[in-house]
Image 1 (cartoon, one colour):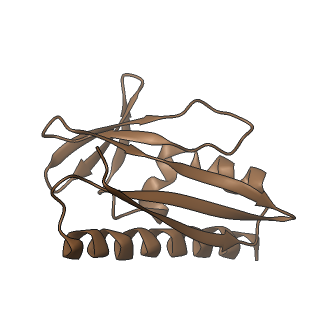
Image 2 (cartoon, rainbow, N blue to C red):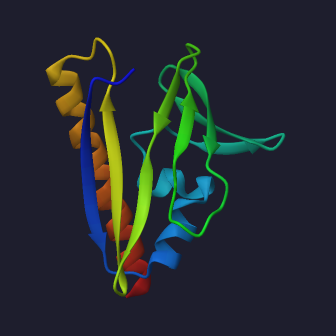
Length: 134
């Protein structure tokens, strides 16, 4: 169970439908979220990502009109990590909110390190989507 949560957000000057479509495609993860792992592959209908610890399975929320991009990561050790992620319309733009949860036993330093990594991933998502529009 998580003991603390940080809501990390980025504003992207692209329509929510475009941001959602890009972020909802697991094949795009390596372009904007390399902190999650390396190569992403679909095998027998399931998504996997290579991590330093081994191969992790990714399960995403079904496509929806509400901007819910939640996903679960089944780590090589067998732990399931739930990742709440939202794309929220803000006029003609989008706010993406990632809820980073501190896991039991996680040190302040590790939680801060994860925060920096997620903020970098969100900044990369913004850069990729806004540069594609230019």
